[in-house]
Structure formats: structure tokens, C-alpha cells
Image (cartoon, rainbow, N blue to C red; front, side):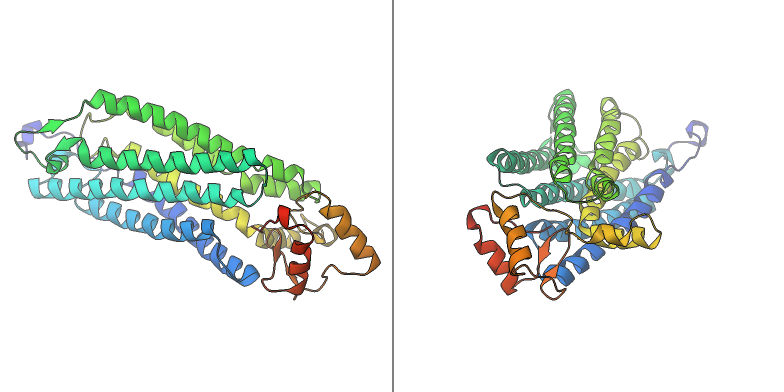
Length: 348
């Protein structure tokens, strides 16, 4: 450590990371558990987007534990107050933190895009989402390459070694700006695409607003990404124990808010019940399924059968609504699907 006359003022900014991430991380965990429970209870199965978030959430929790360990070794304090062993241990943990975050954010965005795939049959809808998923996979792969390849030997990331070869840091910063711009565009697209669904809902205005809010929380992740961009020019500068805290917390909040945003729409039914309990939504407003996708020639045919021979199911044992979810294996769900196999669709 430096001598006493050169010691900078002591400070610890680790609370900048711990407080917001711990609170939102707990919220995200509860929402994911409720999402999986609700999905299994109503549909009896998990979809691809559910499995992706099942992978992302444990990684997110692991990330929080790694950050807590790094803070225990001095992350957030001035480097002058730490022993060389503490600095090495903390930097190793920060390296692991960044690596886990790359994969977690990838799974979160893939989950959001996969969840929207079920709500559109148009070619442009599917191609847009598949393009986003492919682009996200490529970007995350490139970040893994940068993480492990920007310096040789790799141990330079946490300790001083000789004969080091590193990539131009300005090129890495420029790449970060470009990717952040792409992320902002992706988040905006994923947040605004559900507008098409909300407009097709056979629901009251209040419920449309509720569903729109639930499905547009990704805009908050967009705002966080924009805030993270303000830290790019300081990349690689300053105290590695303190000046890395701000960009790290923005990156983590981007991930956690993404988990929350993609889990809340799946809990629309419990949210409706809560709002009904407080009198915001009325009982008569909850008589139709939430998402009534207007498939060609299906809606009119379904109405005619409902009025003529009652062929559409009406009991709770036949239909379960999680947005629109037909109980697997029910005869009525099969009959409805047979009406137009070309435009087959699945529930949230």
C-alpha cells in the first residue's frame, strides 16, 4: 500500500451496487418463481422462453453472489487501502462477474423475443424476432471473445505481469458504443411490438392499459442502457476498485430489469385479480380471454358455433386462461385447433 501521506480519502461506494441490485434481484426472483408456478398450474408445461429465463435467473443470482464476494475483498474501496492479495482476489471476481453477466443478459433477451414469437403468424413478425435472437447471440459471443482475448496473458486482467499484449482500448470503447446503440434499438423494438397485440384485445380500456404497461416495462431497460453509455468514455481509467462500480451497476440493472419485464406479462391473471380486489377492474370486465388473436375466419366461426351448438368450452376444467391458455389434452382445445391448422397458435 502507499504511505500514509499519499493515502486518498477513504470511501466505500459498494452500496451503490448492493442496495438497488439486492432489491430488484429479490423482486426478479419472486416474479420468476411465480411465473413458473403460474405457467405449470395453468398450462401444465413450460415454453422455450420459460426455460431460457429458468437458466438466466440462477445465473443472475450467481452474479450477485460473485459481486458480494468481490465487495468483501474490497471492491468499492480505494485501491490504496487494500493489500495486493485483496486486489488480485477482487479483480478475479470482477472478471468472473463480467463473464457471467454476458451470458445472463443474452438469455434474458432471448427469452423476451421467444415469448413474442407465439403472438404473431406474419412473416415480418417472426423474421424480426428471429433476427433479434440471432443478433443477440452473435453480440454475446463477440463479448466473450473480447473478454478472454483482449489481453495476453489473460491474467493481466487481475495482476501485473510482463510481456503483455492488449488490443487498442479505443477500438473496444467504439465497439461498446456501437453495440449499446444496437441494444437500445432492440429494446425499443421488443417493447413496442406488443402494441400490435394490445390493439387486438377484446378487453376494456383499463385492462388494455394494464397489459400495455406490463409488456412495455422493457422501456426501462432501454433507459438504463442509455445511462450506461455515459460511462463508456471512462472505460479503463481511474481506480479499478471504485470507478468500475458505476458501469457495473448499470449493466446489472439492465439485466435484472429485463428479467422483471419479461416475467410480469406472464402474471397478468394474478395482477387482474389483485386489481379486481381493489376495485380497479370489475368482475364483468374479466369474462373474456385476454388475448383474442384474430385469426382468419376463425373468430366468426367460433361465435357461430358458440351460439348454435355450444361447441366452445365453457367450464374451468376445459379452458384455463393465462392470457389465452387451453388446458393440454382437452377435447375442446383440439377441436378449436382443427378448425384452422394453418393458423395454429399457442398461449402465453
